[in-house]
Image (cartoon, rainbow over all chains, first blue to last red):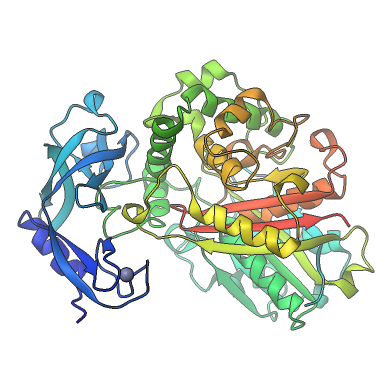
Amino acid sequence: MNKVVTLKAFFEEARAGRLTAIRCGRCGELAIPPKEFCPACQERAWDPVPLDGHGTIASFTVIRVPPRGHAEEAPYAVAVVRLDEGVSLLGRILDIPLDALKVGMPVRFRPLIRDEQTVIAFGPA
Amino acid sequence: MRGVAVIGVGVTKFGKHERTCAELFAEAAADAIQDAGVSPRAIQAIYYGNVVGGEGEHQLHMGPQAASVLGLPTIPTTRFETACATSHAAFRHAVMEVAAGVSDVLLVGGAERVLNLPTDAATEYFTYASDATFEQPAGMTFPGVFALIARAHMAKYGTTEEQMAHVAVKNHRHGALNPKAQFQKEITLEQVMKSAKIADPLKLYDCCPFTDGAAAVVVVSEEVARKSRKPVWVRASAAASDSMFLHDKKDLSRVLATERAAQAAYRQAGCGPEDVDVVELHDCFTIAEIVATEGLGFFEPGTGGIAAEKGWTSLGGKLPVNPSGGLKAKGHPIGATGAAQIAEIVTQLRREAGPRQVDGAKVGLVHTLGGNTATVLVSLLASE
Ligand SMILES: [Zn+2]
């Protein structure tokens, strides 16, 4: 059975502090929703899988020239985090000094809530 | 499939302009048609590339508008958009249409104008070419995307900020030889290293500028090409994609779409990276040139930074890369960039590049990357 996780559902869960991935019922590929076909085997049989939110920084940057709408926040860090289950997720880094950031540093998911919007973020592990 | 050639090119001066995208495109297109030596009435369709005209000029349906300003309002037009690879994608479709025998003479190009906009607005509009569901809300920017790639490349291979700076110095040295370039001024390694941080580890001089400009080329069948002055033959034109989501990429130090598009292009042309004499590639950021020279098969993974440092990619080096000055110095009017790169390779293969001519160039490669590395086009052109 294919259980679709919509973006709306993903971010509602994230707002409550929970991350959801999807696992392919055929090849076991783990992915971040939303997707219909499995990019690895083209099967269409996803199952939602909770992620525990722990991971390490795979790469990061400090944005010093932000797009419109983020001016007051700059400088801020954005990282791609490799989660312990094997998938990656991009998000803001919170409560870690910018000059302390390193590839391989352990971090933990937490939502960054701005009014109606939920942004993926990571803080100290 | 029929043989396909480029017989005319036109490029505006790159920099700041007080004209609309349609006006800029019309100048480049008229130059390309006259360079081709064909009648404007011979053009059967126009493939027009533009990225942020909707946001910046409040103009959609821009193909017919561009054709109207060109003075050829009855020619069918289509607008293409694949972020920074826009007009190279348009070129590939034109090549396929001519190869298939549907058309004999097509005009392809693009234009962009952003220097009239506030920097934060232009930065925001460009960001629309990255994912709007995860990445834009996190405050991601294009320098940010390539900063993530740079950091991953540095962590995996030991690539240094100095090696990236060498790419900027080299491309500015080339740009100083190009009268169409936005920056015709050499810079020093120290200037790059001391320039303001934009998205660590990328600094101001690691980044291409915002640019206004346009470029166009005339794509024709072999039969038409045989009657023209100096045809340049299209040996391959390939496209590849990768996930729009940075979180889907398993190795941020590589651009898989570049590797796949290059393999497809070499297969189409029946040649390999060792046969290429001159390259125009997508150096939107210095790290992008380093990763592209690896992905296109010119240098082993992890050694692109060393190649830049040793001068192998300079004019006079073993494989000159971006003799035009690249996006870094020539400028990057995103909708026009692919067509401008093709125009430079055509000029090189016609031996008409003046002081930036690559001696004896017979085979040229054009590489254009769209947005967050999700789209890549690679074409191979040859003088015979
Ligand atoms: Zn699968």
